[in-house]
Length: 426
Figure 1 (cartoon, rainbow, N blue to C red):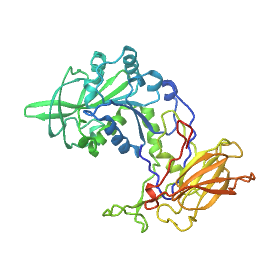
Figure 2 (cartoon, rainbow, N blue to C red):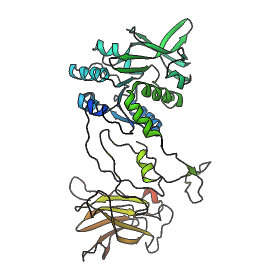
Figure 3 (cartoon, helix red, strand yellow):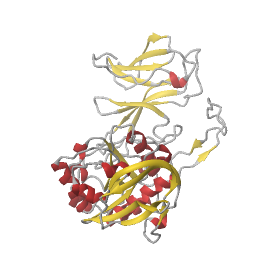
Figure 4 (cartoon, rainbow, N blue to C red):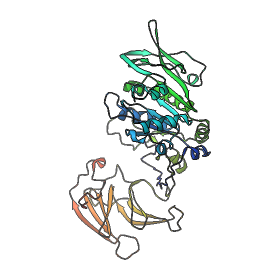
């Protein structure tokens, strides 16, 4: 998912995950402000490229406090997993669904959750008449073309917040249409009025369907993205929506400004801008964690600045590489710079770092490290260094050059991501 933290002045959030898989009843008892959690079931297919389209939608809705978690595994349609989410999007072409998964899906929606079938979802799970009925119709045939679906019900809460838009897409024709749909948009072709976007109730749940969605030109269209957003907001239960509204009251605004020393390697016009840093509390609102998990702050500025790499040691301490030289200041003469490695430690067991020790300093754009032989190996082009503390004060008193010859012509293309392989070699 997209990160909304700036590269410079980054406010570090270290996440401590605690499983909180909730049942449906437990979820409804959750009254605190929170994001909406939506599961997106896609399919490994280039024809309907959900792997490409889901991230486009997730990115568009992230700043609205709507998390989208992607899966291609139909086995995720089980009661325990589904009940982590406020709603389910399907954009896939699975021919069949097993009885147990069918029951879990139908029961999930009947219990009061949101269901958002998009485009090819109307030709999914064709062995299940109950699924087709829940969608409200089934794909029959299509041509392609550029068109604008017309809003025919302007009084519905969804259509009050969406606009008609033109796009190239498949021109779906449906059959097996249910009688309990409320049509919001139609694709008009001469005298033919094809139901295009509709809603319906299903048990205590709500269904929003649109036939839009074959092509990237549609998925990248802000109006289509707003269609899905408004469909989600209408379909989720009232308590989830109220919690979402409370969460969204103080969503941070991303502010961008010009800065003289921002690299512009691609000679863009206009040049890239600097994103103003956010507070830890604001950053937390824009980070997506798996549904059912919690996020807690471990360390942030001013205790640490400009982190570029980090790892935990066997004592539960966080080691952080801080770089103020990156990406502009490479000192090829002696490798001495303004960067350092810091150990962050929680000494009182409250889950937050309260002790900060500088393990090594005067480094120059170290990009990665890993623990080895009682110390650490650092990649710092043109060298790899070995640093070690031998007297127990958590400060390196051994510094050895172990490999040399790495290029320094591009600080973005240096050695990084040191870790152990399957053979336990670094």
